[in-house]
Image (cartoon, rainbow, N blue to C red; front, side, top):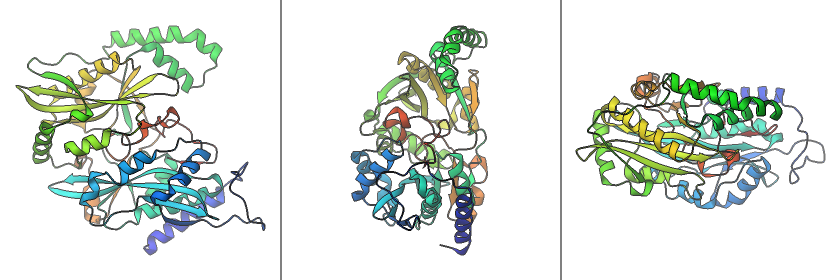
Length: 431
């Protein structure tokens, strides 16, 4: 660790310890030493044999454990691993008295920028037992100390973790409006119910006001035309499963790389299938294809995910279009809107993407909401590259990046919401 990073880590630990409150209760398998002093936690690289301990840790934190099949997918079947100079760690764990009290996963990814292939990593699943939360910075620091990495990404960080990342020389993504979500209301009544539940409006008051509020939203939607309109003639649409992604996607990807100089996550057919085919997926993903005269001009991937309320939410997980053609984008948006509506989702969301994509989508007059802070931060190992990436025009950032759609939707509703939209268990550090 460099001296600068050591000082930053020590400073962060001091602040966290100074502010730490006593935990109300200790987990049954953790204890203080007889002297009353907290057992010291040591950090080490995680291994597959840690799976049961990490699962238990997540259960203590009120999170749903990952599956072993998904660990194999991420750290044995990951196509990006074939491009790594040295196989990276699968993550890190904190141990105290032989018990795993903290964990951070480490996922390898492949990116392209200006004709160069970049080795990237993204953190995932940070969780620390309450009484050891001051050590969370050690896990995050270990992630940024990795060697043989060009680009470090964090794409689903809660604000507290984002502050640690910035202290370790990360920057927020400079892509304009990334923290502003565009969304379309598909079912006003279900949307209003969901909104009132999030606002914690008392059931009695909600019962009286849901109906008139949903009617008002429905009227506003029609009056202000808050929905996509039909695109030009000559464009053909089709819908396929993730498993049906084939060779024409390879041709689209190669052509896109030739025309584009922005930071792009690898979207070869093998990577797309790996990314969206998740073991035990409780949601679903479909690919919407737009062609002209048989040629694939672009696609959109729509994820449909069950929510804690039992309702379903749809998100546009990825869009890739040759030359960011606005007419193709609008056609794909209409297809995504219809797909989500037929599937009985109450809302369709779009987060991120370059301004050219967002402008085309904004023509359908969506509603907007903002995250309390940018959930996407980055750090390039090379200082010159990091400086170049401080220009928002250098990025093509979306939910496809990092772990935003790579893992989270596959498990139960308790972890299906964005970490920016939910509160962590009391005194628990988790992402």
